[in-house]
Image 1 (cartoon, rainbow, N blue to C red):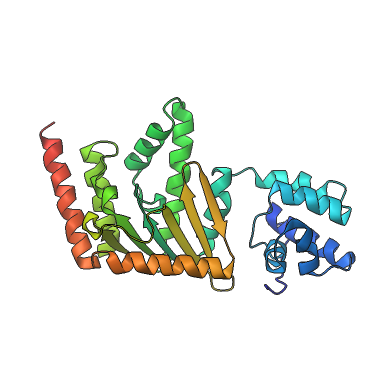
Image 2: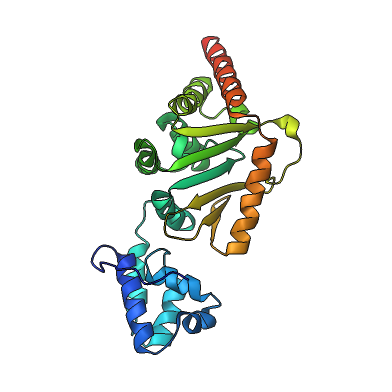
Length: 280
């Protein structure tokens, strides 16, 4: 399980919660495993909370207050963690994404958020939230583009994406938006900033037909897997579970078109969108 990591409790609510959790657990004479048992979580998970790796959830805060006699401390401070630019189900994954040195993702329906253009992201949010105000949509788009700034670093994280062919063929925002979005991906790949492959329809059935998958690796933390769903998501850290999803990703890669051929296909589809736009 993670060893003690020096935290600055003033740096963030998560660091404050982690430092206080460790202090109160040790004062109570409990091991990480003993504290985790009533919550049905591992000692390793408690260690990750204490070291600021994982985000404490409200139901966990309630239990910690009860077990450690914290008089509502964890609940009160856990509320600060709720103030995120991202939906509750994705907030912790977004934080992990920003720390990752390696990200591997299979995208079954949409261009991944890290690779979306502004116009594409806007079209995605407008389709998903047809009654939202312009200001709400603007905030969502801004948050998504801000996430993508992690690619401003020339080398970290290493991003390897497998796009289902459906991502290329689904016209989101119109042909002009699609052409620009696909060329943005091609540009990042030709700059050697990302690795991209396409899983073609001709591959038929494959190991990740259940939905989107993101794998994240870190220099001093255990790897995580994030499963994406409709308005929901799961961030998983169990080693055996993460290992099984790493195999799933490897199987998807094995069925995908090689990178050079994938780029050629993406560029070809972008040209088709250009031609379609000219006829409008």
